Every structure is written in structure tokens, then in C-alpha cells.
Length: 246
Image 1 (cartoon, rainbow, N blue to C red):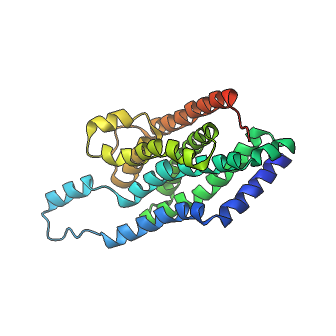
Image 2 (cartoon, one colour):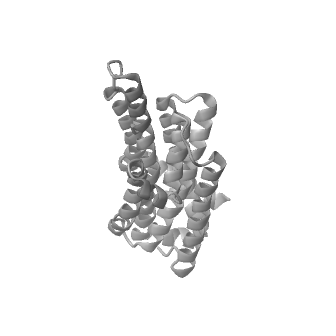
Image 3 (cartoon, rainbow, N blue to C red):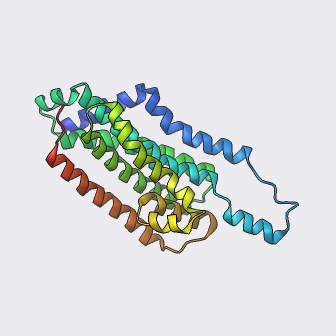
């Protein structure tokens, strides 16, 4: 427990002092805010039936940025943090001091999880959800955040430096971050991505914003946490084969 607290405090201080990491948590809500108020479409002169159809098919800019944040930003961030400590041999000294690798990962992941909660809440506030929908949206976001943290940690263990971590994490991050946006215009992509957590985050968000869904909320959350479970097993396999060697 002491080692976990020590890693948590270390990572919290490092995150606060690292502008590159903080920017990733701030830029997406800021973009969502600016895009929402700068790209507001006036439907007053559009026929009612057409306006309804356009509103139903128009991507929600806040949700789009939230999905990109949960899927694209966090995976390279977590992978980079772990790869940096591996590259600088910080883990070796931590292990020598009695810090177990799982405690290290939990300490790092919990900091990212907590900071991401504020970012997720910001998206909910910008969208203007009522309290119930705000809580559902935040829960869906944090489910996606948890999955991205585990995936990023797995990639981080596989790498020896930050450059490699970025190279390995970005393809997965791009697919998971931008895939749901592409799925809105292509049914085949939507069916393929249906099993992934970012697509289910988009499904939940569409229900909350448009009242449109083919998937019950409980099933969407089940799929998202099934992703967390599968990724956790993958992490365990990678950890047993490679470990956190600093």
C-alpha cells in the first residue's frame, strides 16, 4: 500500500509538471467547446422534415471529441509514460526499493484515470446533459478510459523507449479514436467496430443525445467492460512473458 501511494504521488507530480501530458487532457474539451459554439448550424430557413433528418445524421462534435480523447489520446500517453520509465531505468530502482510492478502500474493508471474523470466531466458539461444522462455519459467515458489505460500499459511494456511506444500505439489509437466517427457513415465499419469499447461509447452517447440506439445500455456497458477484461488478460500474458524490466 505504501509503495502504491508513493507511485501515485510520483506520477501525479510528474503529470502536473508535464505540459505535454496535461495538454492532451485539456485540448479535446477545448476543441469541443470551440467547435460547438463556432459551428452552430441555423435550421430556421430549412424545411422541417429536412432539418430533422440533418440533425439526426449530423455528428455530435462534443461526442466526437470525447470518443477521440478516450480512444486516441490516452493509449499513447500511458504507453509513453511507462516506456519513459523503462528507458530511464526508473523501474529498476523502484523494484530494488521493493516496489512491485503491479503497484507501479496501478499507481500510474489511477492518476490517468482520475485526471480523465475531470476531462470526461468537462465533455458532459459542454454537452449540457441533465444529471441522469451526465452520470451515464461519465460512466461510459470512464469505462472507455479504463480500457485505454490497460491497452496503453500493455503496449508500454512491449517497448524500450518512447519513440517505439508512440509508433506501436498510434495505429491502435487512430482506429479506436476515429473509427466510431467513420462508423456513422458506413454500416460495415459500424458492425466491425461494434465489439470495441469506443464504438459502444458512441452508441451510449447517441442514445443520450439523440435517443437513437439498437443496443440496450446494459449491453453496451457489458461490451465495454468485456473489452477491459480481455485487455487485462492480454496485459497479464505480456507481463508474464516480458515483465516490467527497467
